[in-house]
Length: 159
Image 1 (cartoon, rainbow, N blue to C red):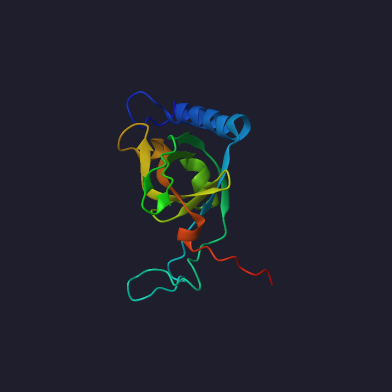
Image 2: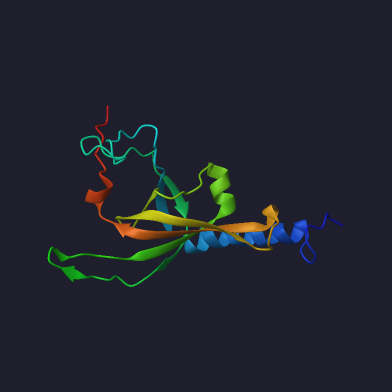
């Protein structure tokens, strides 16, 4: 019998559950997003630590991943400057898929979904059974809607 890590779930049980999750995410749900990792070293900043408006924020090339998505309703507050748009979205990723492509979302990264951009606010590693790294199954990323103009994305010229 296999090595037991925890009281009730063997390594074989975790592999079966992992294969079910992989099939569910890749073959049935098939909702894809693109994750853009912030490249802090290449981003030029001013004396306040803000990105330079001329060059914008620098991001690594986007990586396409499958995710479960939980969207909140869109809130549209009005003030003296006109309407604004607020929406929080939770993206749930399979941790093993993230390890395969060597990407881990962090605060400040940007996720593109449905031609909209969302900035990562918080990343939670959900444990299936507390404290055992082998049994960590998902990453939960809390984001807020971000206007393209506030990201200072600059269209790069293709050489």
